[in-house]
Structure formats: C-alpha cells, structure tokens
Figure (cartoon, rainbow, N blue to C red):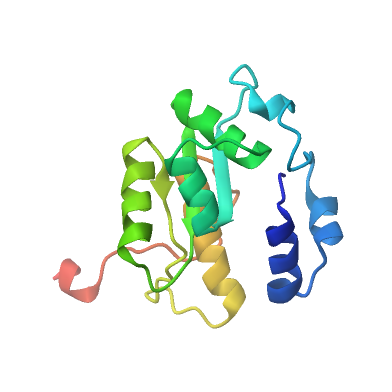
Length: 161
C-alpha cells in the first residue's frame, strides 16, 4: 500500500474509516515519498499495480513519466517492465485534457478501469456496486477469487433465442 495525503483525506470523507484503519488492512505499506523502497525497482516482482482511486494529478504524472514520489515511480516501473497497471480514474465530467492523459497512459500500457457500475446484476447496495468494480479490477490482474463478488453476465433473453 502506498497512500498519498490526498488519499488519506478521501478515505475519511468517503468510507467512514480512518487512514490508519486502512493501513492496518495492508500486508505491506510504503511511505509516499520513499523513492528508494523495494517497489521502486523493476527487480521487485509484482503481478502489476492498481491505483484506486486514481486522481487526474496522478494520471498526469503517470502519462508524463513524472516520478517524483513512490506511487508514480512504482507505476512507471510497472509500465517499463510491461506489467499490468490498472488505473481506477473516477473524475467526472472529463475535459479534453483528462481524455488525452487517459489516451497517453493507455498507449504506454496502462489499463483505464473507471468504476462504472453495471446494472445487469441488479445491485442493491453501494457495496454491491463497489464489489463489481473490485472483482473486475482483480480480473484484469488475473487474480482469481474463491467466489465472484457479483453476478457475471450470462447473456440476455434476446441472445438466448
């Protein structure tokens, strides 16, 4: 886990948890400015990396290879080593600058996975919507769960006729 000060603030505003509580859930944490941390090197093996949520500032840093903190450096390493970098960007609405940054990051190998809810599985709670996004992000990293967190699409009535 690499957490920026903005992420710590967002956690408190959006989840009812504290940054410390989230940090306690992580197996390993790194300081945001620790540019010499293990994950700053390509020799540190990972399946990939997820940045969730990914701010437009972080997206801009990634798209422009501006690695002035550990989060951006680790993302840059993942891209240079051709591993999966999943960016859960959730700004809305988007202006042309945001879209260009998304294209730039995608051309470099990143995967943009905005948390857009699917309604075919009939979510009843915010957790249902979040779980669908989490499961899809894990799919992008080829991480299998013992059971899915949402109901996958099996085709509509029209596709079965």
